[in-house]
Image 1: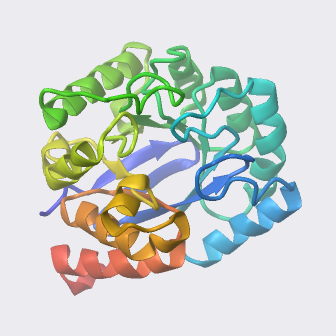
Image 2: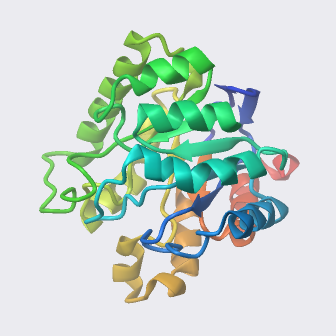
Length: 285
């Protein structure tokens, strides 16, 4: 599928989305994230990890201080800030845009002041709609992800009549929440929320029909890296899901995703460059 090339307006300017897929590296400053929890609790070590992700080819970094894995508990804003602010400040000079992964308006405001350019809200502004005011005032980029419930309860029997249609409709509502508070459409990227209030069949259906979201004209981000549905398909633990993650990311790119959010940056960059060449021709690599 040929996706529409777009410019994403973020705090530091414009980021070109397409024809080359952007790779967002994940950096969780948490003790309990499902894949890398506890690995980057020391700020100096976390900054080195950020530097390594950039060296591996990350186009942008997503830094979070609160796990949103299924069953996780909320983390107070003050604790999120204690974890992430030194890392954002230290990584701000690495030459790639930084995203803060939070649903908190307070955390977003202070992270943007420390050097972040994007806010990644897994609630799609359901938890704190005033987060949109922070984004608008800063001129930041905004990722609106689809989810239902909270991370604590979202995987308790998620149900849809038509998961693709309902996710699209609910992302439309999230975009309206943002634009009603003054966030420009050019600042918004949407994410179908693979693994968030979704069963394995829901995740596969969304990936199979991702083009239906892409053709609505908004840039699309997809995060499939190491997620549990891949583990179920392969009967594989978290550290054994690289090949499955690359396959799912490649499928997303071929269906038109503009950004993929991943743990394994170097391998993903190589995989999506091939996917880009298949979709658009070798001149885009």
